[in-house]
Length: 236
Image (cartoon, rainbow, N blue to C red; front, side, top):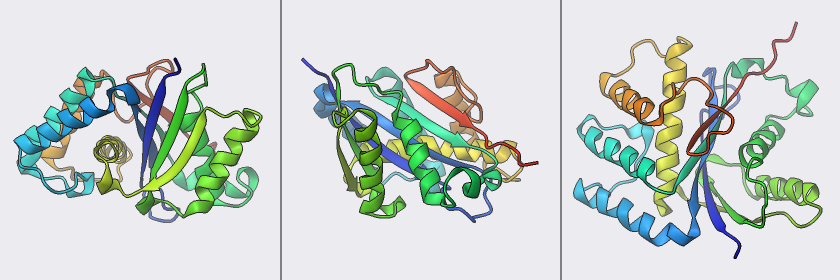
């Protein structure tokens, strides 16, 4: 029997001229066979801490640090997987030479490289993208076309759809991991001068549990918590 998975994709600092030198796009990968139990346990943790609002890195609460750490523990003992593409030195991006002059085209490429390691092997995938951080149906259509062309009309990526992040817990988990990764990277790149202690405490906890520095790429074959470190070439 084929395995089926859902991907919940979110982005951070993806705007072209936001004066932030990094961007990140990533997913939480959910085995459909475990979906109900995974959601149930996630909701139990939220209820334990009376968390009724959407989890967002940009709304990090010092009073919720134990909740955030428990969600990290939950992730690492579960069948969930995380992967992201971390783009450093965003100002180096050469859209004219490499992306047909379009930042959107670069986004398509990053989404492709994000998902591409999930080859078919008979498995089937559905992809959900946070509607608040995207540019409409054109993006979904383009990504779908690329995979259909590569797999000659038999792509394992069977379904692409927009969802609001508040409609699914796994978007929120992706947002938190991506937020932590971009925050740590911005600190290392001197784009954040005075990091908040509680956010740094959470980042250290996530680094300890994952075994990786968040501002660096992981081993390519890492499947549980994978960071693909992308740096555009310096144009001489």
